[in-house]
Length: 144
Image (cartoon, rainbow, N blue to C red; front, side, top):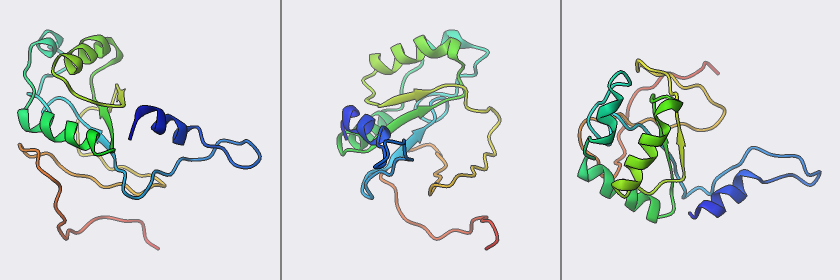
C-alpha cells in the first residue's frame, strides 16, 4: 500500500465530516516492528553511538521490504527516544528499509500487554524473520 493511500485511509470522515477510526482492508496488515534486537543487534539507548554502525539482520531487511512491497504497512516502533530519531532515520535509509512511519519512545522493559479496541496480533521475534505461520496458542482475554 502506498504511503498516500495509507494517509487517505487515516483521514477518512463520516457523512458529517467527522474523523472516524480507520479500518484497513482485511488483506492489509499494519506491522509494528521493533528495531533493537529485532532488525539489528540489541543496542541500548545508553550507547547511541552504536546506532549508526550496527548492521541489519539480512532476513529482516528482505522480509520487511517484501511485506512493504506486498502492500502492508510498516511502522517501526522503538524504545529509542526522539533524540535518536535522526540517527535512526539515517540508518534505516542507509540500509534500504522501506517503511511508512517511525514511532519513538516505546516503553522499555518488555513484558508488554497491549489493550486496544482493534484486533492485535503479537509475534515475538526469536532470531529469524520468516513468513508468519499459524499456531494455536492460549491467550489472556477480557471476560465476556
